[in-house]
Length: 252
Image (cartoon, rainbow, N blue to C red):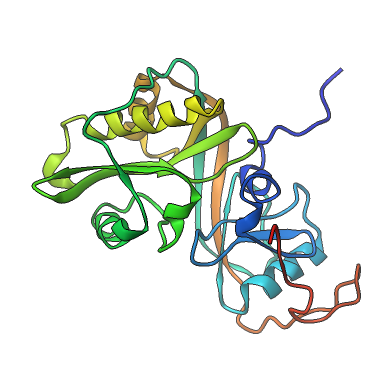
């Protein structure tokens, strides 16, 4: 008989925000999101209804983008889809995880350099407090940060490797591979399993991750859509609340 318990990686943002990352969460109804300066991911229940979408709109605000990962349900018809892409979710299978002697631990003081590297390389969302989500490692050349990788989503027992990027001046030197293996080593040392996401169209990254020992777990999707500019707070049929009065921070 199939196990009815959902796997934490089936809805990894929600599993993170109801688990190890609860202290980063804001909630309205059944909707959870990360604090806006940490990361843009928002988490819906597996089968959202009209009230859930109304809560998303109230939480994000009129005209605001809503970013979802591992999510295939279409948004309401009056929402504008600004980005939609197929993706893959890969998990540690035979990764040769190992620390790297050149990798340096990055922290809040390094955020300006990290944001600059992200601006040059575009690995995906990285905000001023993203570094607080987990361990980030970087490699410098002549004092300049040229490569980094770190941890993002954190479902119970799992940690996502993210923010993997390398400056064009040092590409082809294997720095990304070394940092992924080093971050994976730290995750394994905690007794957890590394995983990661990649755009389905990014075949070079997928080949790299597979060569390092990651294996496909599932195909998934990424979505970004705009809340209608004329959206107004709706009465919550479950609580009869209106507006943002039911917004709460979780884990504080």
